[in-house]
Image: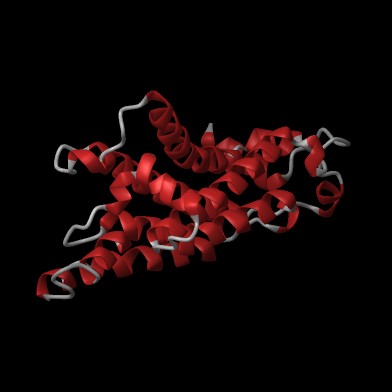
Length: 231
């Protein structure tokens, strides 16, 4: 909804009476998110904090961190490209050969607004998630953040991929048909779609989280209660 509203405001016709009708849908989600973050977060006891495996013994988290670093690079690459920093050739080549859809000059620049959201909103989330994976014993908020981010990323990527192939998108601005270009496009966009879902599952996977503690067979009370409820 944020992408839709910003695209309308920055588009050919600007803010009007019709676009104001979107405001309730723009205001309600942040209120719900704030309530979500105010809920009591799961906490770990002091003993379990001491026994938490270091990052080099958590291969799943290492892979997720590499994915988040890759996502930051793509967000910067596409963000700089749509902001018309023409002196950087790699950005121009990406727009020209991989995602020409981002150059579409329409009355409402939805694609460009989506990439700017990635640059200024998703990039800080990627950075916070890296920190959360490096210090999970002090970052219980990562559970809620990953859930919100996974939903936003899924909506954003499905819309973006669909628009890149849509019949109403000018043919020359759809994804080129060359195999190598198609592979690059799908690799980038599917990783941006699937990665946040895996991160969210990782943060909410009780059994995985509890297995990372070495010196005790007990499960923290907070996790035990959660497992019993799920059963």
